[in-house]
Length: 133
Length: 430
Image 1 (cartoon, rainbow over the protein chains, first blue to last red):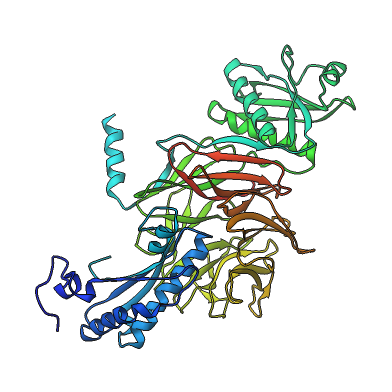
Image 2: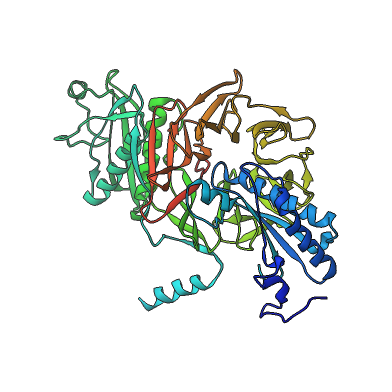
C-alpha cells in the first residue's frame, strides 16, 4: 500500500522523501534515560502504521549513547533505548518478527564532539528499514 | 614492495580480517612512561651482561627496563664494572654503591650448541647467592629471556611472581573506519595484530590458558561475541542471537563464558559453554544486567545493574538466586573486576562527574579511589594482582595507564598513531 516510486534500495518514496514524516528516523533521549519522550510519539506511531500496512518490511532499531561512562554499560543502555522504541512499535501494531532492536552503545557517535550538544545528538535510537543497514 | 601494497589493499576491502599469523602493526608500538613510583623502592644493581655484545645489550636493557618500570626497584649505577655470573661479587663495593641486591650474567653457548642466558642474583648485605638460572634462547627470543630473568629477580626480592613475561591485549582505533586488536608483551614491545576491522571491537577477555581471546565485534552492524584462537587465527561465533550480544567473561576453568544477551528483552547475563552452546540465563531482574566477572573461585558472578535506580555492582551465585548489592557509595559504580586472590574488587566510580579507578577491599567493604583522572574505564588486573591496567584519556587521546593497587605506582602506555583502549591483561605465561 506504499505510494510513489521506489529508490535503488527498494525503499518507497514515503520513507525517503524529506517531506514525509517517515523520512525522520531518530528518537532522542535524556542523559541516562531510556524513556521515549512524548514529542516522539507521533513519529513512532507513523512508523508503526507503515510496518502494519507493509508486512514485508523489516526494521532494525539501533540504540546509541553518549561517550560518558562504561562501554558495556552504555551498550546495555543503548539496548534499553532500542527496546523502548521496539516495544512501542509493537504495541502500536508492528509484528515482533518485523523488528530487531540492537545497541551500538557509545561506539558509533554521530557527532564526535565532547560537549553537551554532541552528547545530546548521540543519545539516540535510529529506525532503519531493510536496505538501510 | 608491490607484495606489501597488494596485501594492504586486500585487507582494506574486507570488513574484517582475522590474521592467521600475527603480524606487527604498521604504526608505532606502545611506549611506557613512569608517572609515579613506590615509596620504598629496593635498590638493585644489574651489571652489564657478559658475552656477545649486541645480545648482552638487549638482555641487560630488558631486565633493567622491566625492573625499573615496575616502580618497585631503584636502579643502582653499575658503570665501570665488568662481571658475569661466574665472578665473585665485590660485596663491600656494592654496599658502598647502595645496592641491596646485585644480579650479573652472560650470554653464551649451551652444552647442546644453542644460545643460553645465565644469571645469578646476590643479597649484598648477607653476602649470599639468592638464586640463579639459565634459559636457552635464540636471537629472536632474547627479549623473552630478559623478561624471564626479570621475573625471577622480582619474585626473589618481593616474594611475588613477576609479570614481565605476560602479554596484554588492547584495541587501537586508528580511524573511524579502522580498528585493530593488538597483543603485545607487558612492556608494550613486540606488538602483533590479531584482527583488523572497519567496525568497533570491544571487551577483549583472555581465556585462562592464554590461548584464546573472547571479544565483541560490530562487523555485522550489531554486537556479536567471538572466541578467537591466537595460534591459528580461527574464530568462532559464541553468541549471535537476535538483539545484542556482549561482555564476554571466562569462567576460571576456561570451560564457560558469561555473556550478556538481549534476546529475551533487556540485557541479561547468561552462562554459555565456550563453544556457545547451552545458554542458561543467570539474571532474572528486568533492569540492565551487564559486565559479568567471575570470582576466582568460580562461585560468584559480579556484575553491574541499574535495578536499584542507578548503576551499581551486585553479585550472584553461579547457580542463580537472589543477587546481593556490593557497591553503595555514590550514584555510578560499574565494571567490577576481581583480583586474582579474590580479595579486592577494582571498579570505576563516578566522582564529581569524573570516572575514576577505585578498589574495594571485599572483606571490609572499604573503598579507595586510586586516580584523579577524568575518564577511566575497563580495569584489568595483572596476574600477580599488583597492578591494574585501565584505559583513560590524556590530552584528548586514549591511552592505557597501569596503577598499583595502593595507587602509588603509575605508568602511562600510549601509542602515537591512534587511540588505545579496552586493555586486557593476559594470564601467567606457563
